[in-house]
Amino acid sequence: MTNITIAWLVLPFLLGFSIYLIPKLDRIFALGIALASGVYAIQLFLESSSLNLQLLDNFGVSLTIDRLSSFFILTNALVTAAIIIYCWQTGKKAFFYMQIAMLHGSVNATFICADFISLYVALEVISIAAFLLITYPRTDRSIWVGLRYLFISNVAMLFYLVGAVLVYKANNSFGYQGLLGSPPEAIALIFLGLLAKGGIFVSGLWLPLTHSESQSQVSAMLSGIVVKAGVFPLVRCALILEEIDPIVRFFGVASAVLGVGYAIWEQDTKRTLAFSTISQLGFIIAAPAVGGFYALTHGLAKSALFLTAGILPSRNFQELQKQGIDAKVWLVLTIASLSISGFPLVSGFEAKIITTKNLLPWQTLVMDITAIGTAITYAKFVFLPSNLLTKNAKEVVKKDEKTKIQSGFWWAVTILIGGLIGANVLYYEVYTIPNIVKQLITIFIGWTIYLLILRKLILKLPRVAEKFDHLIGVMSLMLILVFWMVRI
Image (tube, rainbow, N blue to C red; front, side):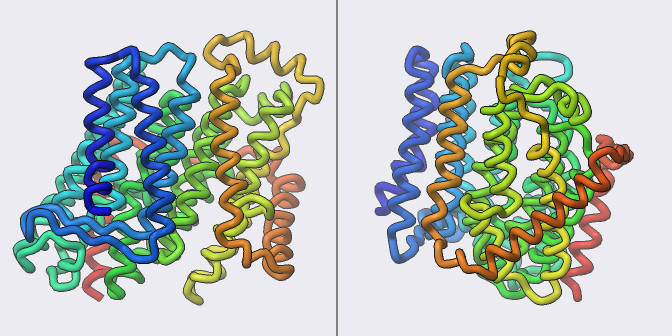
């Protein structure tokens, strides 16, 4: 298993560079990388024990591969495969698929790293690859959004690197376990970097503009897998160290509330999905023990939603309410929205239930209210009018060549929706009458509030917190907050 793991880890980078040598095979190489990760994740899931590798002693690479890793790796594999198939007929150049390969490999690395210096390298590679994908259209807007993302990411990782050095100074090791014997400022600095990279709480307010202004396939990757690279280490540290667990859970609850509070009022489809990502990432770290499965269901559903948002005739909900959309497109939106809302028959239901079961008493009420807010948010998609004849909707779509529905879209969402339905077999035991009733009541309350109160109510929230200088400044406040939490 050790040799297989190393070969799997190196494969994306090897084939990624090979794309430049044989550009005609770019899509095949990229898809092969995703399929290899999928096979590896399934094999890992079937293994009963974890694998720990120490490659270069205290100065080098520590790897931990277990069932938690398998959920995140499988998410990466399915989302990447869907994106490649989605782009198959779009004429993307070899450079695009090379960056997908680099991104895929570095994201996989974060899911098995067990030391802070290796994680730092992987996160920095992710930043560069994501930046190049964001700026791929080479427009002034995309370049600015990409540079904004890269600068915020690099500032956050500078804090992180200082924290990693302090951990090594205290323990002569970069291992995650070293957090326990490290000074409070080391933990605060590392957490600040990971919270920013993962899009958690106010540190994640860079996310709405970045995700909404990127191409839909890039948005799907950013929301579906890239932000998970910052979230996974938080989950891992919470599971390893009991002292860290309450801090991670607190930021999970805070992020869930903040994200859904913005998402409910947002009138732009892609910004709504981006704010919802901040909220759903909170659910992942609010219950670390089951965060892997929640990450899988969220990654698949959110990627499907971003891809679908890219082919809608408009990004404005008010305009979509008047125009109507293709019935088949509406069906994809509805299934993915129901999954995130926790509706039975899709794996989001199981994720919501097992997350609720693993919450602490002080988290339960707040997260239940947030679940209602999630149902309200996705009611905006579910209750969009669908054109059953599809004629008018297709005519609207054909007006813009960029939003033309190609076969790649249908194959991509088939993979993602199929994953949501197929994952139901993993925790089938949660399908009990009380659990089903609870989720249906939660969704019913959310839909009722939306239909009776919020559907025609428009409230524009200020975007001052998303300004570039404020995003940098808030890092100092977050550092103080985390430091204070660690001290007490």
